[in-house]
Length: 386
Image (tube, rainbow, N blue to C red; front, top):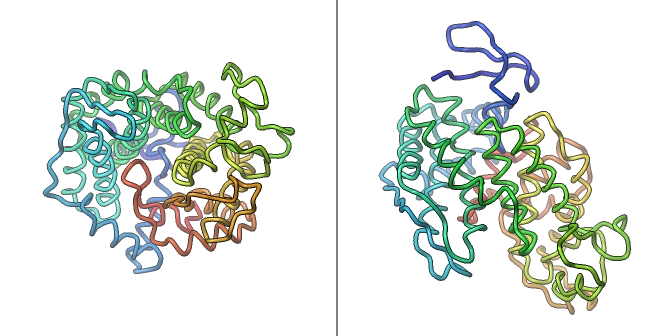
């Protein structure tokens, strides 16, 4: 197997072991390049080796979690059955947590150089690629999106930084046949579903070097991100995805969980609860970050929505009482550990003032995992200039 190393800007020089250069793999993708880049990983490794904060505490948190256990036994099954609110839950939690464990081990391998973690990540990915055939149940699209968002993060790090993964092609086949067909066309459910599914589709496409699937997922993502977070430039009512069936103001208000006053940063699920809203915000930041690594920076297109969404929800997550016009004056908080990636991109790299988001982000450090598809983002993205 060829291990590619990229030096310089995306899609410039790619070096094979032993010297010599060759064009990038088919499609021109940068590897590793799903959510985290080699430059970001190298920065984190240096900070951890220096004992610097917040990276060292975040690293210790990750290494002390059950996800980094070298005695973990993967629990794959041919059919993962996931009903509404995880009832039934036949393999759903196992699949999501095994994917996070594979990603955790991949990070641990790169940051420590201990090959046992790479081998554990491979063991978990191989177990699932040898077993799973499909997802069933009403939550199957969302489950496929959650797990499908995390698997490529692990796979990218292992395939492009570790010396040997004999079953890498079988894992690629799993992503291509079990996951991508489910997520690529999105969903007509709440916005967090489709945003998570587009995150999975873009990450899978990067790993597969599938330019057509990547471009289609980005197009759908941009449409859905616009429909998930409101900006006054959208007009008096939020933008709706063409073909969504939301044709009247009453239908739109109902879809926005009864909210009829719209301000910058309000999200389609704000009045449902902050937890599901956080899923959508997180997916927006993840896709934007992956696209930036791939040389197609989407922050100019989604950054303003993401900035306002983070600031708006951070403000109330920090405890400010909502006005009566916002969700009837009652909010269900619980945003989750989802602010690091967007905050680092928009505040640290791009220089936007984000006071509320900064306060919340720093309060939550080190950000851990939501046990679904968000994991260790203080470690990977906190104050990361790359």
